[in-house]
Length: 80
Image (cartoon, helix red, strand yellow):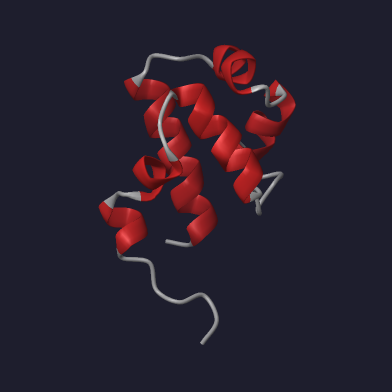
């Protein structure tokens, strides 16, 4: 699984865990709903770290919490 897919899956999981619709996350994070949807539906394959940080703020978690999952901890180097 590539990094983009892991980010997308993590966002989907957090939305589900926090029972938060996309529009509420958009309001809480100050990230436009279209940007969130572009990440989730594959139109934005390289979301920036600032965007991810803003989404974390909307979820009420830190970047460390976002990336502290087995999926991210087991990532292999992208460029070999």
